[in-house]
Image 1 (cartoon, one colour):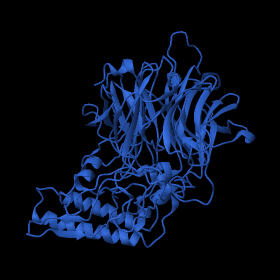
Image 2: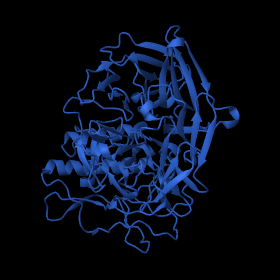
Image 3: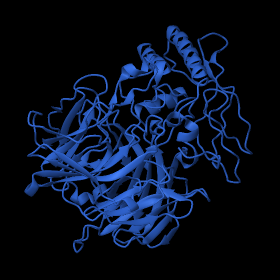
Image 4: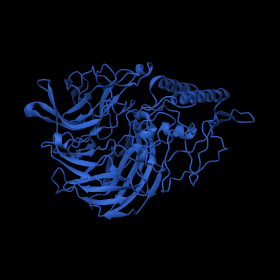
Length: 597
């Protein structure tokens, strides 16, 4: 996503050589000569490219590159020993077909939104796993009230892309900083999804990338290959295809990693501060559909609210909730005429607020050579207001909000005196600019949207003044006041897009914004607000902002802890590994960990 002109060679790719499928004959039969050895960079560093030449080029830098052990290139990648002759022949045929697809794709220029040289350049590039490391250097003093684990999810592709790749396509990796009485430790681990485990075992990517690869006729071809490999038993495509790289939530004593294309995955925090994947989590067989990566926990009832959307068949959208003990409510089908991207939603004290916006899925567009993610200008954006405890959607209230696309909603609340529901979100234009290449520059405007339940009308206004306007994306309000009126929001300053140069503390009523900038050449991600839960803390902004920050000059990363009241740096924790720019995080208090499942 950033320019790769100054990118050190610290990317980490799984070892991968040309495929060698053993058919049971005396000599292994190579299916495709998919990779040639790269020149060594003073060390045995190996690429996971499926094809040569690589689509990525990393200039040499006087920095120590990530070490990846060199495998014996003569050793064939192991295949499933239970494959029969037919399956092995089919595997060869499918690999050949995939090679032809790759060659065809490389004859055409990639748009920036699916060009890996753009999407995962610089500090968007992946890193290897890092086992827990204790007693990290700390500058300043970690506040005594902070004890627990800060975790942040992100996309970290195991294999080097062979063609199209979007930043959102990468395998999920969770970075964790444990703080215990002023001391800190760090670890990062892949979330071992079914997709990840199968591809790691096969030594190559076989699951299609939802955004980077599923375009046009080549996308149709990749889908057909995926289905065919499943039919021949070469892969198991019945246990989910998600990457669990977007959201994190701690609910009912479980840490869940999520992406909206699958069920959540449970990740366990070990006593030492390391991470281990427990597995795909269906809430004790209660959940049999996907769940979006932004569920909401009501701070009073402790219930978890969520949505599930389907891009293929009706119902295109379902709403459900979980009680604090983990019991699930029945699904409520929400009537939509077309499958619609539903990345986020909001809750109030009594309602869920569901955005039905203009970014939709039209899989048939792939047949005509286009993208299945479409900005439908003829569709009118609207918000659905539904009672939290609704058993059906009969009483949902739809209110139109023209030309509104909020990728994220930060909060919502009720104002009974005016019969309004107030929604706070970042309105993005062009709506599909994250997914499809656009000539127009992306803008993300923090906005207040008022939905009048009595008149059915809406209004929308920018919260910041025109002179203060900056792109604000990724952030939160005080989670102890979610669904209730809040004064402040803490949001990433996404400039220069898509990097994050700091965060803003925004007064939602006045539009006043106070900025905290990470420093020259330093960039971060989502600012996580951790409230100070001490009994004598009454103010909404009494707490701390926690964020990973990366120095692009020294190629080092740190965790910064900032006082949310005065925006003064309290402490910075030097990390032993580079932390790529990522997505969303959470904090698990040490008291909560005592009862972790």
